[in-house]
Image (tube, rainbow, N blue to C red; front, side, top):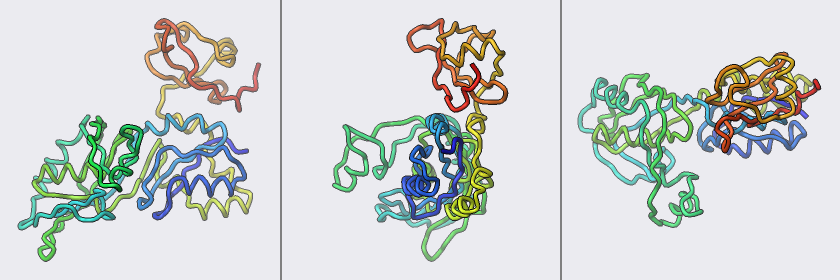
Length: 309
């Protein structure tokens, strides 16, 4: 069994579950999990956790993501992307200026409200929104707050006089739960037009980018050549965005046994999750105790590395 993190370049047409299924067969192991669904039609970086690395799934899902895509002004679709039926159209009679676009995009940076699209996996009253959408049932969708670190135009706007549309490419860095296609729709509203996200690629997630990622064909070749371990990142690589503390021998013994400890055990009051290392191995992630304000407890222990007693 392998333990660690594998960055996969998911090709368009595959679901995230398809990737996990293929990897289980290629690697001959069941303990494989992905760190956040990537829509079937979207290609890009999908971070996969293996063995003990699956304990990192929830943390990597919370990490910053970066996408590059394209927005089209002039009509909206039922899925908010290029794959849905048109639901509203308004001719773009004259080009919208780059300055106007940039100002509208900048106004959407920071912590913003989003209403998830109907064609999404968000649950309302025990059912997925896409199930209601397929049956033509309207329900009240929950308002969410998401973090947009950066939302920038990266190409000149292209005005299509014949189709009466306008398009440009963008780069966005965002937090957990962001629907990028909804960003496109909301941006269109700010500019006075129906809009949709016409292209999307995920460039980075959970601290891994496209330069770290391998296609399933690449991975198959590494398995056949017995070089697969060379492209699996150690578990430690998956917690690079967290605060780190290196343990003394005495601290290690306490942490290794999963003890509940005073909040200032490490010499300072613990206010957020911290990764604990011993001899450069990730031993545990500790956090505040949920019911004992003056104590801290292990959020995760990593058994694969707990070899020193």
